[in-house]
Image (cartoon, rainbow, N blue to C red; front, side, top):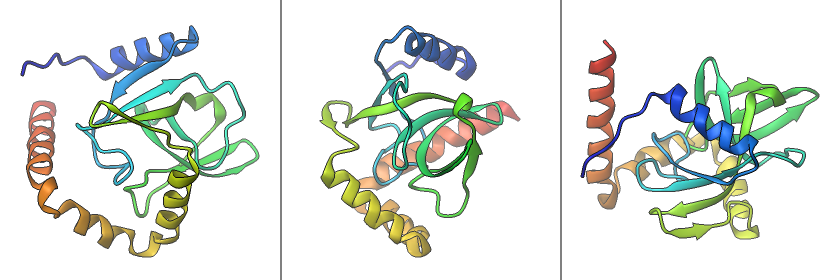
Length: 168
């Protein structure tokens, strides 16, 4: 399967401009930072421009130190929004509302099956996952070693090595 590689700034520039026009945008996901709820190279995420007030638990697309990232809001304090990836056991990002460009409204599991990330069932899973923060790293290590993840993870690892080699 052929792939078209586009510069990240160019790609997200177009995504943000479509969001600003009020359009719904579906984007592929890369990386492990939203495991186990969003799987890179497998799932797609449908974004809209965040018109409503953002709240804890929202999955947002934001710019952080020049990179575009999609993570979950874990707390809000005045103008500061603290965000963390579900698959990131330690690090958080602090941004302002101006840094947030998109709100995830749907996850397309394996690119086809729609999942509402804010359904009561999903919210319950997220609450449980967040309570497991102290052991989340161990759980993610186990998850990544499950037999159905082996080929996917090997491909992800190889692709990241290729990117790192091209950038060095």
